[in-house]
Length: 276
Image 1 (cartoon, helix red, strand yellow):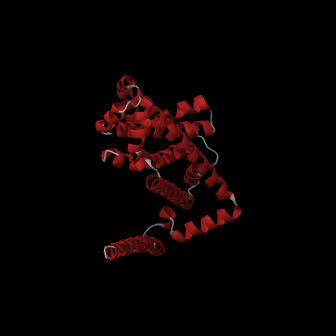
Image 2 (cartoon, rainbow, N blue to C red):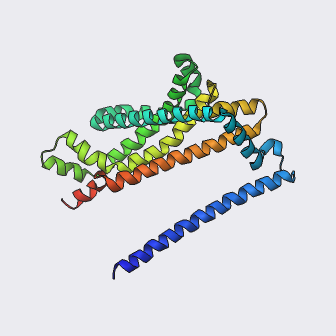
């Protein structure tokens, strides 16, 4: 008897989800149609803003020639490498700051200053240090993403309830036990949130790096398109970047669902809270 309302509730959730997706698709279609019609009627200048049919035709042309996949592959590779390096480095430094509170107090003002500093201004220095290759691009991506990752994850560590930590200590747990059985599991939502933020920041860092030094990649296409006034190429590259960001974000959402639903970490807070 109790399952009928629950099934009805789930059906209602599914209907709402599909309705929202249909409305989103309708809004996007309406925007594209309006863009095309306004450009055809010359109400907006198609030279300055292009139009969806021109963008689609250009994407089909460069995809058929194979050039598009090379540039997409370069940007995807740099973004994935920067994302993984930034996440691992950010998590490692956050653990160090939690493990050594004195180090955290020492580093706090420096992190605040570094987080507020425009990292793009460091680009010329990275080019001199790392050369005009992938090293400078990855360094720029790490510089933009890693400070924020450290700050977000460390803040999550400090917000874990002290009661859980005391409970482990009462049972003779070491600092390593506290880290592995309380801090990290209880910070899973914060770590996932940091991953979601890190995707966008890494992509920004990679594109800025490609603006400065690259000879391939979507950032290079955007700069090249602007220099030769092929704004359709610029808009097509931006569309691909938006799709890339959406795919990578959904990958993190999928990981979050697998991690929280299937792993013990997400349930640790509940077990500790219930005294289990």
